[in-house]
Amino acid sequence: MKKLFESWKRFLKEAVEMVCPPATQDLELNTKNRDGAIKAEHIQYGPLNVSEPGDYWLDIAEYWNTTEDAAKQSVCGNCVAFDVSPRMDECMPGPTSDADGRLGYCWMHHFKCHSARACRTWAKGGPIEEDNISADWQSRANFGEEK
Ligand code: SF4
Image 1: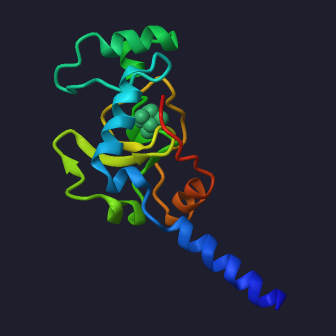
Image 2 (image 1 turned 90 degrees about the vertical axis):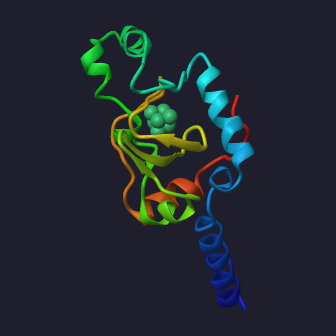
């Protein structure tokens, strides 16, 4: 009986882990979380237009106490929370690449972010390219609403 219970528990855990994150399937939720990440003082996801960034890189460089060139090296594409694993690619509703880079899922703020953008909570160590690491982030994720 205990064995059966353990198998059932493992099955449920794996099923939950492999479900696509809600924001990849729900445009309204994705937009809400993205807009929250743009507006939140401590996140400031951007720039809106990577070809016309305005003062975005200068501002974030000042925040990080570094140069504009150095700030431009810390983008979603190499952030620890940027998920471009095969399983996440399958969750994306359409093409993921354009001339500036590609889309991935942000496990910190729960929306589809772009590799050429950045935010103030960037952290070294990404991207996530393995399904098992993606599933591990998902098993620890809190899908609560963004601020
Ligand atoms: S936490 Fe990382 S992946 Fe998410 S928006 Fe910020 S830089 Fe991009």
